[in-house]
Image (cartoon, rainbow, N blue to C red):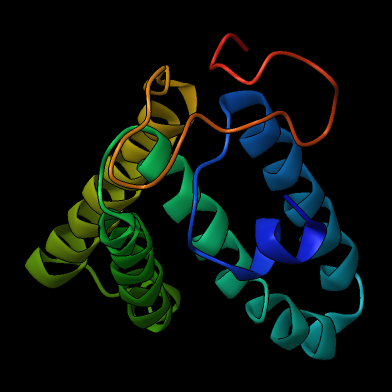
Length: 149
C-alpha cells in the first residue's frame, strides 16, 4: 500500500498498528498546523479527508462498512458545533435548561465518539479475507500480513 492509498483512498483494509501510526502522523501534522493560527486551523480542516479514509479502512478490516466512520465524525461534529453555540451563552453568564441540555449533548456526543473511535482502533481485525479484501499487509514495518499486531 502506498502513502497515497493510506491517506487518500477509503478502499482496502489497514492493520491496527499501521492505523495508529498513520493516525499519529495526522495528529502531529494537525498540531503543527494549529501553531499557525487561523490559517493553520483552516488547513487542518483539510486533514478530515485523510482521517476519514484511514478510519474507513480500519472499519473494513473489522468487516464493517466505512460509512460507519460518518457516525463517529458526525457525533464529534455535533458536539463541537453545540459547544460553539453554547460558548457565547456561557460567557454572557446565562444558565438554565438550554445551557444544561446543550452541555449534556456535548458530553454525550464526545464520549460516544471517543468510545467508538477507540473501540474501532483497538479491535482485532478479521484474519481472513472479507468483502473489503484480503488481510492487510504491514505498511510501516515488516511483519506478517495477518492481524497479529
